[in-house]
Length: 236
Image (cartoon, rainbow, N blue to C red):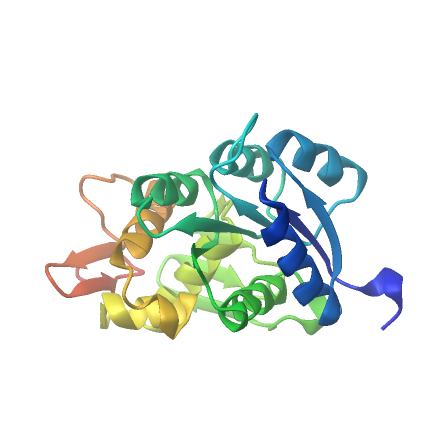
């Protein structure tokens, strides 16, 4: 692969040791890397050198990772992975709520982060390399190649992770899906112990597809178990 063809990854963290370790590990595996020490510097890099993926810490001076995530998500669908400490659940959920696609808890194993990076970048490959075809189920039309989604005649704009979640639901329509199975199917088996992760994204998806969030018709909660996806609405 030519140097200019390498996938671009932006690492945003105010701890030089972390950015150095991540830069070395990702560069060694064929990624083109830029770094930034806070959200303001990251935005400058994004405007000059649009990356395929952003990896950002949450706690940073000047502009933190949550604000950076909001900015990126307001202008782009590029995948975002956030780095968080185990005790900071509230900020982690804020980042997911702002549009982050994935998170890795510090301290982390490099192999876990690399797996998350590969999964995130697969969603950004050229259309010829993506899964092709479409899913037609109930009121939903889901184009797997272009990531276009329609409910009837209404077009939806979903983030990459919201799209992945909807695809998983559509492929298991009518079945009861446990929290653990959805987490493993969409985020990988290492996320199966983080149910708050799923609750946030189901909430995002419901806001975009449901006529009423208080009375969901498509994504129905099965108490203490998980969810059931009814693509045609209640009773269908």
